[in-house]
Amino acid sequence: MKSLKQRLGEIEALGGMGNLLFWDKQVMLAAGGHGARKKQMETLALVAHERRTSKELGDCLDALHKHPDLRAVLSPMEAATVREARRDYTRATRMPKELEVRLAALRSSGYDAWSKARETSDFQIMVPALEEWLEALKEEAAAVAPEMRPYDYCLDKFERGATVEKIDAIFSSIKQPLIDLLRKVVAENKSVAIPGWSELKFPLDSQKKLGEKIVREMGFKLENGRLDNFGGHPSTTPISSPTDVRLTTRYLEDNLMFGIGATIHEAGHGLYEQGRDLEASENGLIASGPPSLGLHESQSLLWERSVGLSREFWSHYWSRGVVEAFPELESSLGRISHEDFYRQINVVKPGFQIRVDADELSYPLHVLLRYEIEKGLFDGSLSVQEIPGVWKAKMEEYVGAAPKDDAEGCLQDVHWGMGSFGYFPTYVIGAIYACQIFDAADRDMGGELRQQVGEGRLLPLREWLRDKIHRVGSVYETAEELVELVTGKPMDTGLYLGHLTTKYADIYLNDG
Image (cartoon, rainbow, N blue to C red; front, side, top):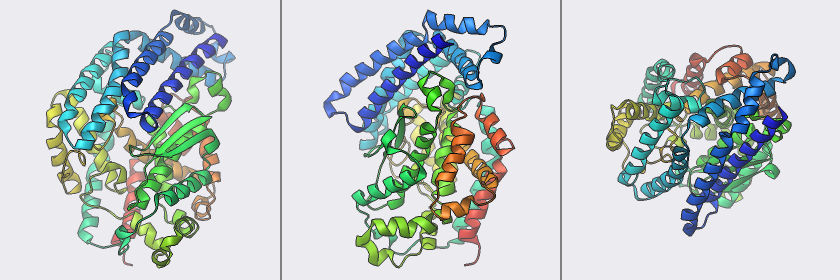
């Protein structure tokens, strides 16, 4: 086991180096450095592939597999590490080296193509990269998991055990109720927005200080991470969890909640990474990481929505956060109550196009659209060239309006440029889990969680999550198992729909 830990630790270190190179590419890299960075990432991917497929690693795993009573001598985290390492090794040894290098190059060139395409709002710039990604991912699936359909393989990479049938079942249970509720809210034609709010300008430096204040009080340790403001897609990059976790966000002068919401969201991801078992992480126990991206998203969405979009949160952080952070706006903010602000940040925006800034009610429909397009690309019913037209038609059907151009539409997300097909469903899985986990935390805290949030006491929730979710890692093979253990029931879409119905009925459909 000692030899296995050492080898896995080296592989994890190489992964951290790759993450560092990509973080630097996003945040710091000079404009002329992209060609060299692509070569660096290709070289590192090749070295990592050699380590992941080495005969020595295979021998370690074979010896452990032949042990007559392995579970009796290993801790649960060690046993899970052996399980995960065997799975990773099997898949890695099936991956052709040339394809591994090609995928690494595509991650770099695909990101660059997406960035240029979005900047010019020209989808055609992205077409070659997307077509190459689809071809490469199908090759990967055929080589690594020939027993799986290519899109099932992509889904499973991000959410262990996910298949088209399972994701279809989730969306079929929530799609029509969400569309009906959204239409009911829109038909009410009730204005809950603050008059003149969109005209206020919030200085970026003050937003940055407010964002740092909130993430610190959530329990994110900036001495073990960073929070950078840059113009791209907000992200969380673990360099060496839990001791170096880097967040990026984007503040907008005319949209306070875009930046604050993104910061809280990424800090939720960051808390998961900083909450991992330090000793296990430092000793090559790869099962200290999360079992799925859906569970990771549950942590970011729990903080962003269950906490950060709640009435209780802003009963504290309106006066002690926003009003204090922007003294130059005192004459305007002084006339606004925390209840006004709560309603403002939960305004339903019919026809709004941008997923990351969509209201909580419309958001899952944005994800559904992307899932349906991905499914079509992989089953052959949709071509890459058809994406913009299908996107516009589905946005019209689901949220009531089509995007004005490609940048506002199918180029708004970085995921496809990076080859992350199969990722989008984890956002809705995460949202459903977030409601369940928050409900379980409140139950375990004697129904006092919302009161604690209203008093600005966020650390008890952080500690509960750390104990129940973060430190557990992947001891359980799937997120489904862990969520059922923590909450006492399997995935509950009814609880999720009930949360949205109650919340938006209170804001829009009830008198007052």
